[in-house]
Length: 102
Image 1 (tube, rainbow, N blue to C red):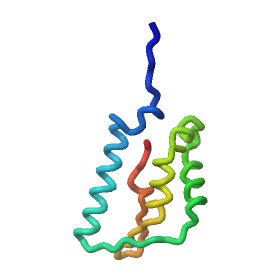
Image 2: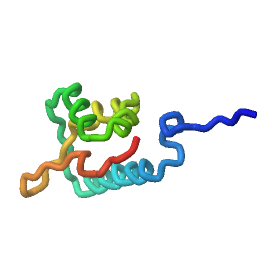
Image 3: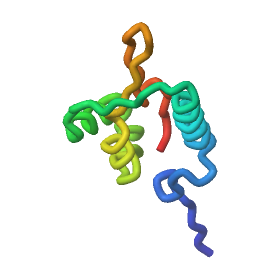
Image 4: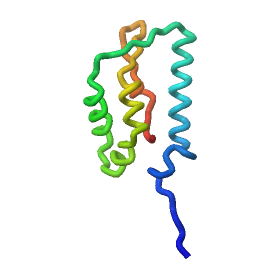
C-alpha cells in the first residue's frame, strides 16, 4: 500500500502558524495606521528588483525555493513598495513585520 505525504510547498499556508501570525501583524499594523491617520505611501521601487532582493534574503536554497511561489511574488510585488513615514521621518515597510514563511 502506498502512502502519500504532502510537502510544505503543496500544503501552502494551510495550518502554517507563522504565516497566520504574519497576516495578523500585517492586519494589525494596517488598522493601527488607519486608526491613527498615518498615511501610506508608494515608492517607485522596481518590482522585479524588489522580488530578487526578497529572495536573496533567504541564504538557504531550500528556504529560497519555498518562497518562489506565485503568492509570495505577488505579495512582494504588490505590497513590498508600500511605506509609512513617522513623525521622525523614519520609514517603515512590510519588511519590518518579520515575514518568515509563505
